[in-house]
Image (cartoon, rainbow, N blue to C red):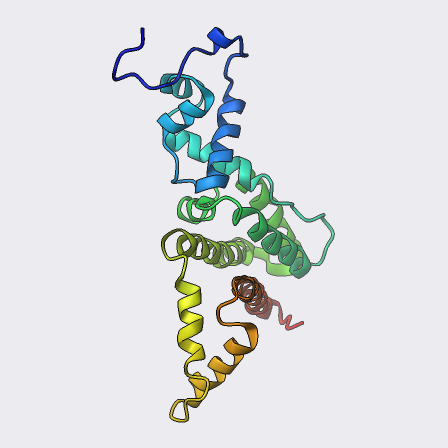
Length: 236
């Protein structure tokens, strides 16, 4: 008989299910991350999803931090690494634009990646390729710094988008309404210009707001590449 303080989890053998593996734990945690973010689930909740005791998770993967690292590694591993041989700028455009699409589906992973650095196997593999791309393009000893600048600039912005979605979901709409209110402000012509641009995109349209965020991310990536390209005299 189950005691009053025991969780609802049960032995999987009672329902003739296969034993839990590390891969199954990480897959379940990744699904929970897609639903509620990397910080949105607990070890006990994960155990409940798998119908096992929390100690099973500790045994196969480790503590919650270890599971979170495994989830982040799996998510980053889904970022498509461009083919070798591309011009360095095109290579990083594809990596960073595609990276946002993946990371935005798993809130909190970008934040963890920026905070901890590329300690995950999947992140290290991308870094290995990216630094070689930059070195071969002529960055020489500056390839490592250029890689860090490009990836951190891009994925930090993804982390900010994640935080806004989690803690201030109406912030963008409120900002758009505030700026749109200045569209006819004769005393602040700069704000008026911004306000008219916002109104042209739809101040209260969620789809338009998402499009603006995507465009700003692409703009940030492009300007970061411009800046790094100056080291090569590459303004193209």
